[in-house]
Image 1 (cartoon, rainbow, N blue to C red):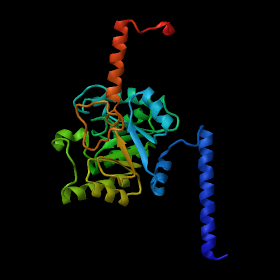
Image 2: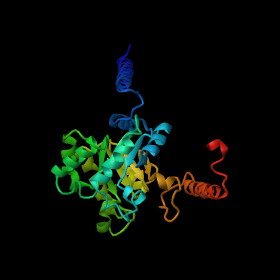
Image 3: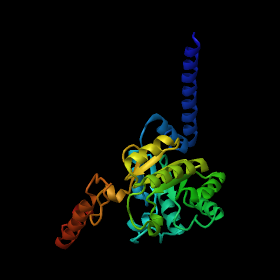
Length: 295
């Protein structure tokens, strides 16, 4: 057998052994389908796209788990979608822990990422570790997410040293909306684009295992994705990222007052819900509900 053939055979055998061990690890933990940080990186290496949706409650988490969504993000966007705030800045650690814990109870295999809210990590690496630890212990997250580039690398390094996986977030960072001057695409100029590339490399070097790119030009997002060995998750950043994330209320068409340009509505759930609510009220008034079979 030629040396090249021996090498190919060895590589194939090694991959089979690796897969066997990975499946055994999943079996011991209860299910070989369980998504982990390592599996997400393997998905990137295989060119397999990663699906991510936001989620904030147990019932919705169960539905997402049943259809096989890879990753769920308990985003601080819950301030807008669940609590009615105008921005995410008002969201607290207690809010995030409460909703993350609820989502975690609906999951077995889906990977759970939780946002670190505004001012829970910016103050110091120590505070970042303490609060990341709370999201893991009390919220039962698998990974924490924070916004920023080089300026938060000390926090990322400290959190990773505490054995907590980190997802970074670059581009449009909603917690910095007052500094950014509004919700707009980032990285459009040559200097801004280079800064995003440098920040992406920096957060990876600091130990981040995943990166969200929000409202970034598609060609820039593609370049960053090819540069990094960690998965990138896009939102308003083209289709060349390793995965995509949307706020689930947006993609289900629950709200019609504002729909971001990058959102595709896969259903009209809002209208369906309103129709059902109206029919319920009408049948109560008419006496059609409850009928004999409901008693």
